[in-house]
Image 1 (spheres, one colour):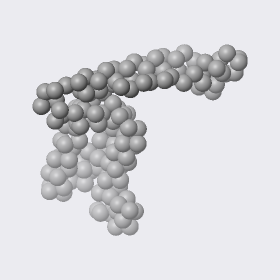
Image 2: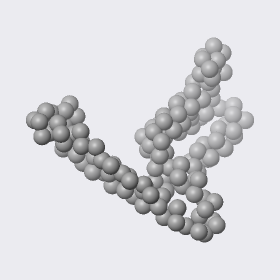
Image 3: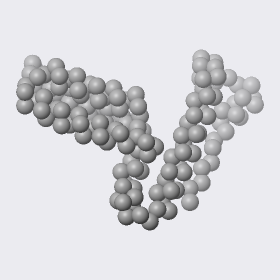
Length: 152
């Protein structure tokens, strides 16, 4: 069983009359974002509890895949990453530098914006890796030191 305890730091500062920078700049958007984040967290916890109770062999096998993402509906990212990897292999075989750079930067952008993984560090890691692949591709073609820097 998972017990989620919300923190009331923002409420405490409101009670004291202290305005946070976020509330001053963004106004009510911060409260809407907090409500949306709580809703997503509740949905994720419901999905995880359903997976824990499942006895179907197929669902037990897919549990690791589903738990990798913030919500089970983000499994599309797994397909997207596999397609990007296959596309990169075929693009490298054709020797098309700018298509390779477009695919890798596109994937870095998609992962950076969608934030599909449950762990925030995984989102940053995947996005950074695709960015480094783009930098390495340019480096292999134009300047080898740039490729070494990207792969270091």
